[in-house]
Amino acid sequence: MKVLVVEDNKKLARFLMRALTEDGHTVDLVGDGRQAVNQIRELKYDLVILDWMLPELDGLSVLREVRERGARVPILMLTARAEVAERIAGLDAGADDYLPKPFDLAELLARVRALGRRGAPGEVPLRIGALHLDRAERKATLSGQRLDLTPREFALLAHLAKEAGRVVPRMEILAKVWEMSFDPGSNVIEVHVKNLREKLGDHAHMIETVRGVGYRIAPEPAAP
Image 1: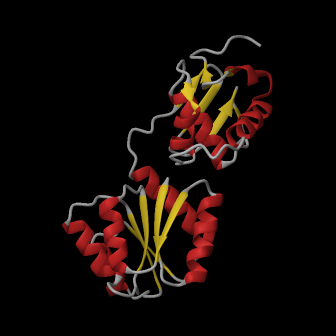
Image 2: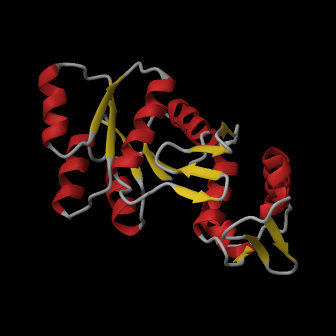
Image 3: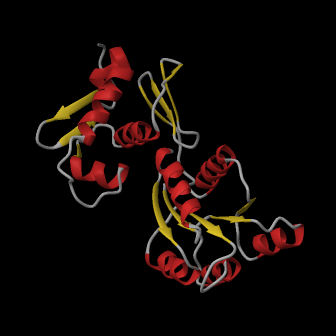
């Protein structure tokens, strides 16, 4: 997912960015409420993590303004304000979820995933031969056995599976999986494809390389 973190505490903002990136998300950071409103208006995000106490415009005002403008992006509020009345105010202003500080990182990431599922209906499971991908839960199984995939490996496999039978160009993979608008000239895709093939074992052949173009998953993998 593409996540906007709105937090003026630079140390906490960097911590959140690192944790969310390691969990497979693309993250933008802004440090004040006015910039957050502009960013949400101009760019498309799958989720916003919003602090309450912000310079220029507080989080509650950000919530009200973006909702009045019609933005439906899921918003998770992070704040030291733990009183019930203030939580109700945040939810009434348009927050989808609320997590008081200090918070447990595992709980934050679980709430992020839950909001992502809520904001992305239609993420139906994909099945290609023995491979089954549950995109809502981000789980992959092969012949009934769970595959231990990193978030980025899962995203790559899911995108190829969604486009099964079609050659997916490198630039599309970079745009959809890494959210890059340019080719950095690295072998990042090749490394991830190699890792996926190793984890697929006898089914590694289902990811085909189309030289000079990209990669393809056959609609029905042939027997190895």
